Amino acid sequence: MRFGWFAYIIGMVAIGIGIGFLIPIFELAALSLMILLFVWAFLFPFIAIKKAIKKARKPFEELINSPEQTTNAKVFGKTTKTSGGDWVSNGDEGVYTTPVITSHFISFEFDSRRENFEVGVSLYNVLKEGETGTLTYKEHNNDLMFIDFKPNR
Image 1 (spheres, rainbow, N blue to C red):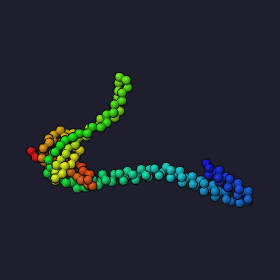
Image 2 (cartoon, helix red, strand yellow):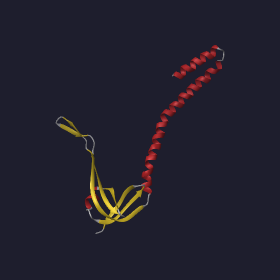
Image 3 (cartoon, rainbow, N blue to C red):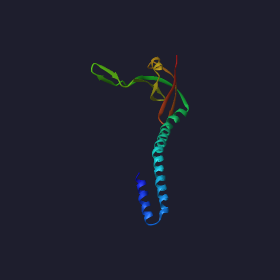
Image 4 (cartoon, rainbow, N blue to C red):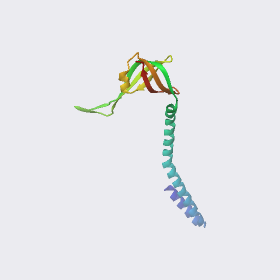
């Protein structure tokens, strides 16, 4: 409440020199400033977070809205990536502190290039290296999204 003391001191000086009508003006200014700072301090973080989310979501929305592309492709390779599963030992016992997550990737060769796509485990288990078929995907600014692969059988 520094502003309250400031207004009080200014008010006492004003009374002392016979200008008592300035007291309500200083108190109102101090109160208005405190309200403005309070509103700014609580609203600013929410506005900044909302803008950051919108900015982060934009590239993904552009990828989702890009047109599908279809091409003949060959399954070049298959890989997995496992993350998480941190183990904390407590004497003779222990616990996992994070879940184990396994991501499945298939490398397709098409249009004289090779690209990795993350796929579901069921498709990963069905497809074999060297298999050919029709690949459907989306691409925007070097971001790729797998849609479908229909093998030639």
